[in-house]
Length: 438
Image 1 (cartoon, helix red, strand yellow):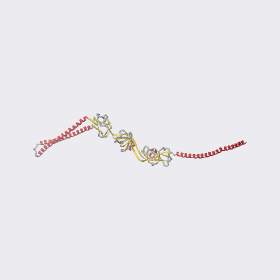
Image 2: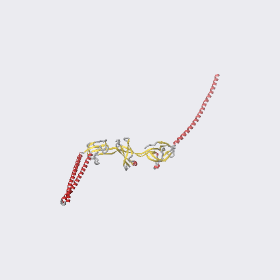
Image 3: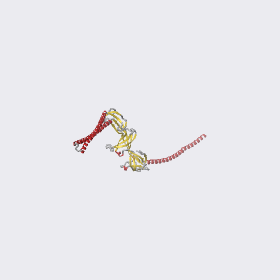
Image 4: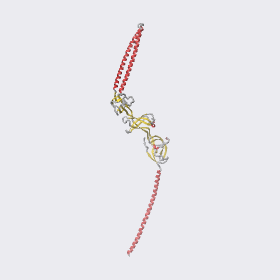
């Protein structure tokens, strides 16, 4: 019996215990719901806050996207220069094929290609045997004419003596006839007077012969000088200081006299004056008024990668109608003979030069129908676009001088301006000028 009671009692206790255990999950569910409700409230607040932040940022991005970006350049002061580069090849200041004045055989060649010669230095010696005979003949003729002069002088002296005697005889007879009339026959007086006149005339004849002989001496002297000059031509010398660029003849070659423009005449050597070289430039008609004699230029030689000073020496003073250019000569000193004729050179001709002027890029200018309607877009300090007219000056490849309309430090739009309007707000993006000097 006791055992059964105990069993019942235990059963009751277990039933109560089970009932208590059944309330636990309910309590846990209630707490979980409260936590979930709190979490939902917090998430709602965060969601509202995040939504507000996203809307604010989106508004700001939308506002920033509405303001366009404009590429601008700062108005600055630079040095501008406008140049034109022309290409030509070096030519000797003077060049000549040295020919012989007289025909003969080359007895001796003193030079070869590449030799540097001074003015008057011997190049070659010719041999002309018949010229020696001509020289001897001319000297003999001169000696003969001088002898004739001596003989003519003696004849003049003899004629003067004969005239003096004849004149004294006539004078004596005339004086006697005056002092003692009738003592001397008139026939004798007339004969004495006739002899006096003949003797006087003979003096003039001899004097004329003396003059002729003297003139013959001068003729023979001239002939001898001619032969000597031709003989001097057997020694061929350099007409100017230069370089032998080509040798045509060798020892023993027969050389014809170069007295005319004959293609078959062979020169001895070719001589070039390379101490001063020339450049012949075809200057375009548009820049002709800006080129003047004496102007200093820079001459760049690509083969040497060096630049040499040059000077505008002379010009044709006439524009070629076929090419619309004017031939202009630039002289380049070459004392060390570094430059070689035939090399190409680039000549930088300065046309205009402006120092410390206000300049902007060419891409910033909107061209008008005339110079008074050129305009630019300026970005003000408030980042607003302002359309402004400008007066332009010197223009180079990338920059242009602004004479009026802009101040140093202002910013001009250099990008696409078609989408911009006056007073529009922009975000400037500064770009440096293309160059500080051109």
